[in-house]
Image (cartoon, rainbow, N blue to C red; front, side):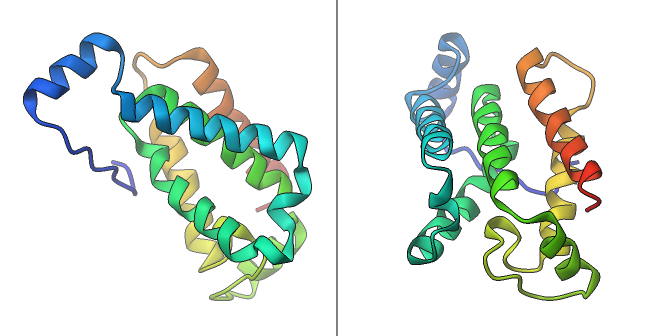
Length: 156
């Protein structure tokens, strides 16, 4: 059971077409957008921590979180990669302190900005749910496993 749910709006005919073609145009657009965000993070690593962009970056990060449970596997892969960039930008010690003090807000912590303990717990549960046995792309399994291990190793 996933903690988050991603609602897909499509009628039966569209669903059959999407299954046959490997996803909808919307899914491919989401994946390409996530890949763009990952490339921006790789080439401009400081943009996630820029105080002038904090509100906009937080909004982008919050909007991508429900995609962790998207039905299209490549969208989940792109989301896992982008969440990896977010983890790289968040200082683990200050996030751990915010969680330990049961703080309701942790400014500057992107997806963990509001209720950091619940945000981290939800993300871990979503990732664990993804690792259920079944047909899953090896690259996605690798990305999800890396994210869970990074959480564990950082002591969060």
